[in-house]
Image 1 (tube, rainbow, N blue to C red):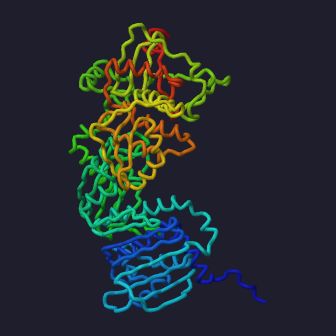
Image 2 (tube, rainbow, N blue to C red):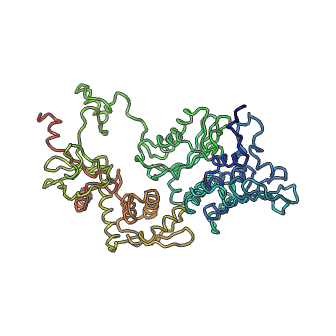
Length: 604
């Protein structure tokens, strides 16, 4: 008796549900697929309607070419598509969609209603599908184009539905997805309505105007235009000045032939183009467009169609680096990109003769070389409580802000202490036991953090300065949502801000220690910091205080006078915890005179 086969062919409806897992991860995935179809249908106007984060309704209405009776039926069959016909077409994909998987996958896990009409037809067609099964099909009076409604996503797969996030989170993901299309297709009129409220009404515009609408005036003014070419590759768009960075990659966009893509290697190349002009952990803002022969790139890597592979990855990588550097040089942002050549004092030991060393120092008298021989050992100020019997130490940057810091003795400065600024970044001063080095940014950050936190916790009044000319600022949708969360706290720490209309606000006053002219930028920086800092790092007041302190503190690169350095040091040692910034970074390091004497062989 033959053994019964254990392998079975899955029913079509079950296979479709499994396939949907690759294409339909969340409501934003549905929006992406439907908008791509509208764009491929040559639509000049696309309206998107969202209810309850897309869980209840996703509707996309376009004025594209529409579908006839036969096409509308076939569109919901797996691997049915009008965009490719033979295997060779995969080598030159020129449309956003091409797999023929999206619509059947979406229809298998939702309740779909689609109306479509071509310009040649007098009446259009209406098709209703619930859970992959056709419920109705009939003629329908409609405009040329397509309207597709996706209701009750994952209604028949409750396990998938319960893993969806809150409505607001899903709405934010949809907005993030749509912004890519808004930027990639400035010639299309886009409308977005969420829960009955119109969020965007973007009329066709030039790319610079569309970028300004999406990024906002405050970011747009610090963007630099970029245009470069290499062989058959054209690169255009905008990159930010080095002093405009964000703490996340949320403001980084790359488009390839109109397709939003994710390319880590290109993102890394852009950062390399900035060299050392941006601090670690910060990310430049950019919106870049690549036009390339479709035959030179493979977009058929993943069902999401976001990953791509270039035929000549290495050339594209260096093309990006050089293009970014070229723009920054032209703007006089970078004096030189040349790294230290081999044979320079950088990275060398003291094996050179005195004459060679003198010659190098004369030729590089404005530089400070460091070498890989015995390096100066700088000691962190640490509380005695962190010293373990085993000799091991807790690293403050890893454990957060240490406790009991006031028990650590502050350095005793010489009676006539003078201050020197090193690279406009560190403050150096003589102390009786040797010397102390202070990071000016994190020192000022600690001072401001404790000041603001005291104002918030003890409900003390904060000195503010009224603006002679109130500043009007239009925020994007995400920034305005964060602003509403911290509106009252901002007004308590010295700002006076009112909502003018929609997402436009008016800044009438600001804290006294904010430089005039920086009020809008400081506010945007605080909002950006607050959004990207996990809540478990700080409570609500601490989060605002840390954001304000980080963004308003004196920066690395700013020149300080003797009096300013003296004032900063005095304020620092009046703090409850002067030795670490709010994030656990050390503020102060010291070197004993005895250690210096050893380095110079005065003692053995």
